[in-house]
Length: 241
Image (cartoon, rainbow, N blue to C red; front, side):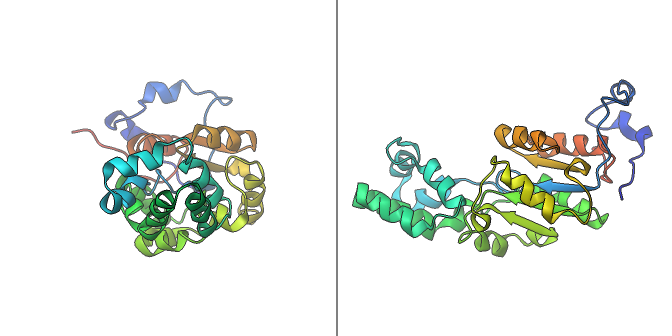
């Protein structure tokens, strides 16, 4: 169940005004939402790999490690998100160059520093939805062995009814299989068409839309709050000074 915000206040919020809302037709208005599905990285928690490496190896060496095509940090990180153990990935890096392997191990050892900062505005939205008893789920590309660190650092992750972690499932967004898993997990609440999904990746948003979800590309918490208000979710509007 969802509640509808007081539209009479929308002229005073930093977002869509009543004229915009009046322009919706039955065909174009967002569907009512029964549950909300969040991505985690760079939606609820900032992911900054440089912060894990710079204090250990220095900024120049850290930036080179993250950017060098031959190392392909982001590709290897995605493999870890898909279930490949970091020990295997670090061993591969060490074969390339022992010093590179040391930097890879430093990333794992100091991973908490890469995900220490919450995105406060989005966390506030999450807490408001939980307080209003809106069912909450998450689908995240995350290493199974590193995800417990995120749980330890950020207690708001306990607000989700269930979190689908790619490293545990062996499949990463935007693979369509992810939405099949989500559909099974949320079957007791409704279909995918009854949900809104939030992600910072346009590829993941497109994949979710193709699976039937109402999907939002995350840019900032205030814009997200406006979008969720338009979908009838029980959030406080942003009041202009």
